[in-house]
Image (cartoon, rainbow, N blue to C red; front, top):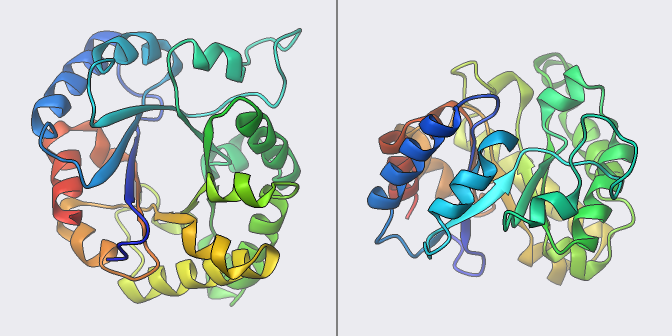
Length: 255
């Protein structure tokens, strides 16, 4: 494990949990994680549960609040959208941007994600920017080409200081919700490529400070091996974050 970068493990609840269910989960997590100090823990509930979860963790030192998306615009006539100023009312600190599901279903582009990342930084939110290849792209040998395009496009315009405060989440699309997980070697190779690329775009010192998470069917059983890789600095967890014990075990097994 790289001691230079603190692990960050975030739970993406996606379109799950009513307010009551969200409160039950967060209260269980508070008990499970009350002694964990070595990891930055983030939970990302749906918008409807942000206020309740925010109040539940207001006094908690171990769990931070994240949101699953936001608009690149600040207020105005954008029906159905949520802006940074609204999220900050609930003490949101992190924001997931460019998740593969939004890239696929909402047709989000790298250019749009870059605008959202800029808006997040302008509001002092920390973006978690997702990148990753499909199975067809990996089998075609295009993984590095896809990652370079997404990283360069989605982070375009960021300053060095903003880049250091940005988390990159490498999520191979073929491993999200499928039960398939990239081997530790595949994960490390992709993370090392992304870090090297950040070094080329910015500089080596910046690349050493940027945290890169792995996402894609992370479970308690594979967490330790994945987090032990030199360039893997945490995880963006989907399904396994919806149950307190499994999410807590992922975190505890990563330390």
